[in-house]
Image 1 (cartoon, helix red, strand yellow):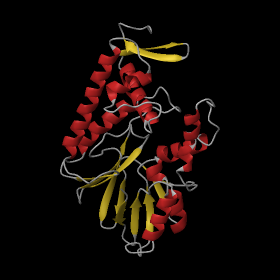
Image 2 (cartoon, rainbow, N blue to C red):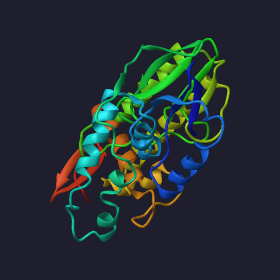
Image 3 (tube, rainbow, N blue to C red):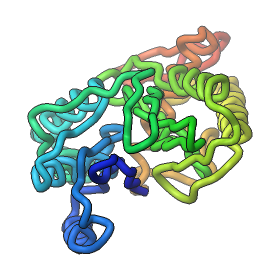
Image 4 (tube, rainbow, N blue to C red):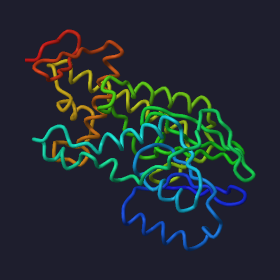
Length: 298
């Protein structure tokens, strides 16, 4: 989902879609018809993932408008696009080689400058005031937009109605603990945003019942932790060995979501590691995870 907001003299756009030929054609068609006879005033991007920021460079250049984005999201996106253009480091893994560099291919070159979004910032758009809420875990500094007067929350990927947000550890920061950040962000939203808002997510339908959804996401994640602890209580396991404990469908190296599953499994393992509940042992370059009573691979 992308969103158009009344910005007084024109329209502000929130998120932009993926950079593909199909999306370029869709935007070209849309921009030739109402409501785009009102000019675009600025473009907000909730976070750095290609389905959100992919067309931002194309749109900002076409309309000569500014990109509004949090600092970490903008800089992280620039860094990842530059990093992913390198040659894949593991030549033997053909599937990895085929996917490597895909991040940058899905994003038009970002503008050279941006307007920073910060937590607690208030932005006037039309007759309304929108507050910036920064969430973490799914991405480094994810920006949600909240309008108290209209009781609207543009949640991006921070809160989704049907699935949980992917929370992954990435190669740039292998020891990170994004799961703790994500759970803390859920707590903050429940404590500071009223339950009667209409949640406008980046995927699937708008919905009411923010607090119930936040509680369900939190409870589901703790059930996943419980299954993970149980899986590690029998024998040490590698990251790929815990997929069945965390995910409802089989995932193997041929699965399209293999990299997402690996990142999220690492996020769960790092969460338990930082809490001192499990142990990590590296043997011959392979990381094995176990509970504290069972520390060596069998």
